[in-house]
Image 1 (tube, rainbow, N blue to C red):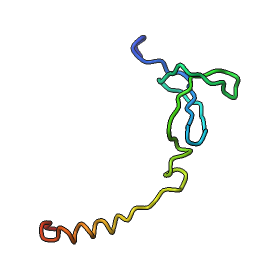
Image 2 (cartoon, one colour; image 1 turned 180 degrees about the vertical axis):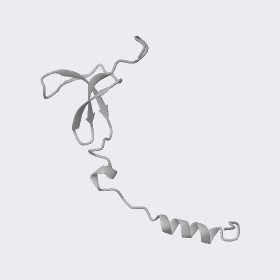
Image 3 (spheres, one colour; image 1 turned 120 degrees about the horizontal axis):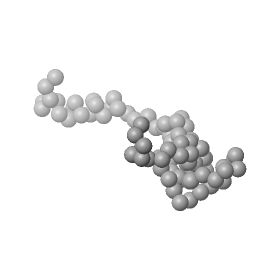
Image 4 (cartoon, rainbow, N blue to C red; image 1 turned 135 degrees about the vertical axis):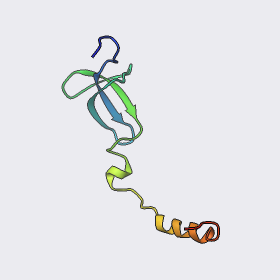
Length: 84
C-alpha cells in the first residue's frame, strides 16, 4: 500500500442505542466521544440506531409479508393489460 493515502483503520466501539448492546471492532470511522471498554482502554464511540442485536431479521421477530396475495391482486387488476 502507498503511504499516506489510506484512512486510519483503528479500533472503535459501536453501541446500539435501542438495545444498549456494544461491540469492539476496527473501522475507519472516528468520533470525539469515547468509552472505556472491558479491557480498560478508551476507544472512540460510534452510536447506531440499529444493529444485528436489535434488527428484526436477526432477532427472529420479522413479520412475513403476503407476497403471494399481492401478486394475485396485481394480476386480477391488470389482467387485460399484462400479457404473459
